[in-house]
Image (cartoon, rainbow, N blue to C red):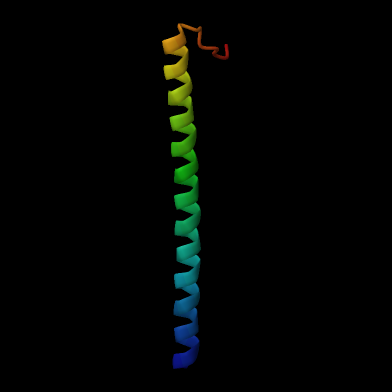
Length: 55
């Protein structure tokens, strides 16, 4: 009984770690995209270029 419970706890810990890892990767991607957009806008402003936006 103890071995089964221990395995289930370990399995839950592994699943929660995977979810956290996926969340961290998603957050990192969002930050990278936001930084890239900010840099593009700053470059456009420095060059006095129009910023293309969707209508």
